[in-house]
Length: 150
Image 1 (cartoon, helix red, strand yellow):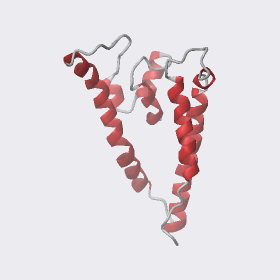
Image 2 (spheres, one colour; image 1 turned 180 degrees about the horizontal axis):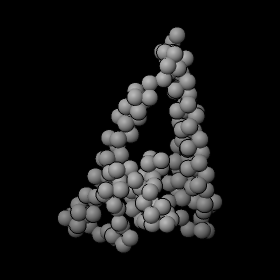
Image 3 (cartoon, helix red, strand yellow; image 1 turned 120 degrees about the vertical axis):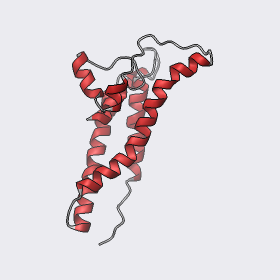
C-alpha cells in the first residue's frame, strides 16, 4: 500500500481563517469597526480549529492502520511532541524574557495584568489554571496555550 498521505491544502486555508478569527478576537478592535463582527467570532474559530484537528488526527491514524495494519500510539505521540514542543517552549521562553528585554532596552510597555505562570505553562497545565482561577486566563501571551494542553 502507498506510504503517501493525502495533504488537504484546503484545510490549511481553513485553519488560517480559524486562527484569524481567534487573533482578531484577542485584538483591540473598536465596536464601530467592520472587524467587530469577526472579533465576536473567536469561539467559532476555536471550535472549527478543533474539528479540523480531530478530522486530521483521525485521518492520520486510519491511514496508518490501513498501511501497517496497526496503530503505533508511541510513534504518533513522538511525532506530535517533535512538532509541537519546540515552538511551545520557545514561546514560553519568549513570553518570560520579553518584559526583561523591554526593560533593559528601556522601551515602553505595560505589565498591567501580565501574569504568566511559568510552572503551569511548562507542565501543560494552562487549562487547569483556568479551572482553578474560575474563568478565562489572565492577560498573558501564554493564555491561549490552554488549547494545546487539552
